[in-house]
Length: 195
Image 1 (cartoon, rainbow, N blue to C red):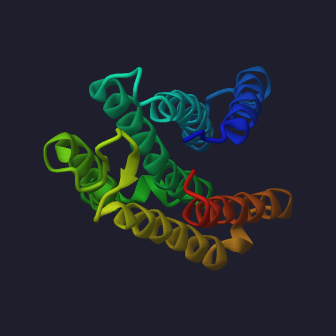
Image 2: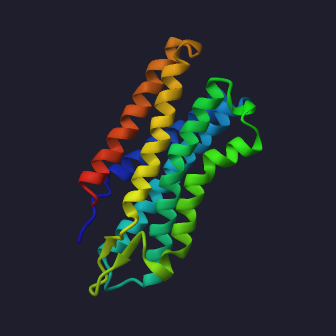
């Protein structure tokens, strides 16, 4: 099965330009800029990991299971980290990140940490993804949980944005809304067209 990697290539190139812009113009003085850089870097790394996972998943007869597991796990871990980073970015913009405390941050991270745990044990139990007899990549019984967690983070971000919209300048507010809508649209497209 051939996977479409055009979107991943385009997203990786755009991410490179944004990273360059951050270092050239914005800098890393604020926590918000650091979280935004982490978000864009995770997007770049996820795009590259998705390209490699697509290549190994498309050629199960010439690759090894452990290579496929490494690339698929890396992609899913990075991809599932991005909604969390986006939420932290918004919390920084609203001035609430520093007020969370260690327990609050850990509580917010708990769902994605659970994702990581499932990915770590996936080679043993194949809850998230597995390969059929021909070596074709397939989603496991708990894969849908990854979407639920991502949508949960996105819902939290939308609620924060709506409640704190007055404290975000208009010039930043609309791009932030666009980022959220684009991210939600990308998740929906991925659910509908998994390859």
